[in-house]
Length: 344
DNA sequence: TACGCGTGGTG
DNA sequence: TCACCAAGCGT
Image (cartoon, rainbow, N blue to C red):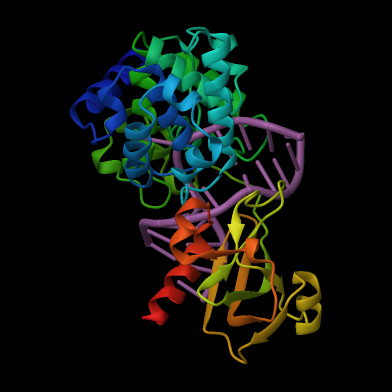
């Protein structure tokens, strides 16, 4: 990097000129900045926008959110993914209401102790809301500094965050919050993973990998995710006008969310009937198939229509209109939609 | 420390 | 079609 002060100024100048529309930038409310940072974890800006607007409309402040029921709060996160974020955020906001008199602590150490707040969120919220001189290192910052310094440090290693935090602290200006945002914005719009727009980069003259012609080789990431496949038989079971749903376990994937019952693809009908404690008529062929990709697993699903025969536990059946009262993961929402469309 | 945790976009 | 990626955190 040629000159640290020049670098920071070039980046900030570009940032102030090229701001994208982001509703949370129109506020200095620490609660809303915090919420946006949580929503933005592993999630792109355009995906977050509508969720942020609806969430802040319903829960405009700490007090409102702290007094809301978790089931309703979670409903505003439905479809956004990584649902532990909303549970942790709600829990943390209640903690702020109770222990900090409803005011987000203007203190990095206290803020870090709250549930769901890690080093990134700590740095981002504290620098943007209160201008603390802290780094906010995310995937964008890894990539930007790997390229700026032509650095082959493995970003999948556990020490990567500290490595890049040091680099940020070496150049961070007084406007720390703006600078942190600018770094991320550069990574999201110019210094992108696949086809970076080096011709439009405000800090091209500071970029060693641009000069060396190694931009495509940065960052270095050694570990690969291995994905396993699971094959499921899913039953949409009707009883009269009502439909059967069940709640997933309170641990693991999609914890405590609702679903149509799922069984290993090879499970025989008598086993299913035994597990559900129902007599069933199941159609011979699935009415839909779908594939759903999670981070570490793929669900291949064959979805069958079925009817519950004889006496059933009616408490487990709901009217289709009642589904708005429950939280469903995206694959279940897709099944609902297809099923309802075919009823028409 | 390594892995589990969602979903949508992209080339 | 599919691997990779995205403003990470908890355990």
